[in-house]
Image (cartoon, rainbow, N blue to C red):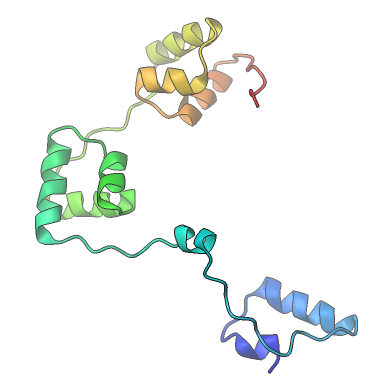
Length: 148
């Protein structure tokens, strides 16, 4: 059996690769090797997790008491969008996202000029490192090269 025949719906890149191999006079492997399920592969696969009604109630209550959505996602082993949907279904009004106001950008600029990293500034201002980086770049701050 050819590789192409073993896949029910090959994507365009794979189809192009197989055609290029055939044109070069090479053939696809006669049989597909089984997928390795080594430890590196297994850890990358995320189980689809269904929360019980009790877990959803706990999640909603924790959010109402100030726990962040990303923390709830980690705690319950689900994606943050799943947390968001559970909160939406429960009728919970979500807290607004932290915005980089002019005052916050000024504070971030001061801290960055003092030698703070964008990650440390993000922790201080309750924002992500990438949000701080983008805000500083937009504000015209010359960014230091990344530390290896």
